[in-house]
Image (tube, rainbow over the protein chains, first blue to last red):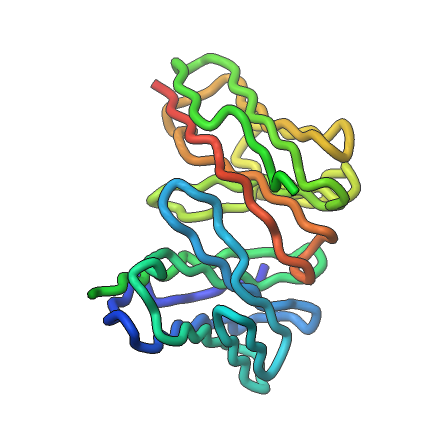
Length: 108
Length: 115
């Protein structure tokens, strides 16, 4: 099972860019990298998914280096409502694993 | 689309009782996942189904836990007998296909407390 490692928590000021890195050294060829956001008392919510290089959508960007052993989620100009736990998920076919999650606290 | 629907939202029961958690996946999704979340262990995958067939149940903690998916629109997770250490939030998720190539859509969870 592809394991992931993230920092436990981080603080950021409102309006700043936040970058969260996830390590997944034993990622397999078929594995995709997916990030989720979770607010208290809610289920995780899909943010972005990628396989290699860079992916961008309306809420975030995902940077994946050539060796795919890590990935970085970038949240541009965070607001207070971005305070949440962010999970990195690596999986493909029958191999799924959530990381421990990274608590991001946005400070006014 | 109503999203993934879980019931009940909260369950409080005494140890030794049978607990049944229910999930209705998003229509058209072929894969269904059951997770357990606690402060200590984070989010753990318990079992997942593809086309109603259990594919990986290696995360099921012990024989007291069982999961079924009798049809494409319904799944249950049962704990019998329940123990206080089973207290957690249980999430159900569904996706269009299995594995990690399609994002999973989560329900709002069932908060289970075993006294």
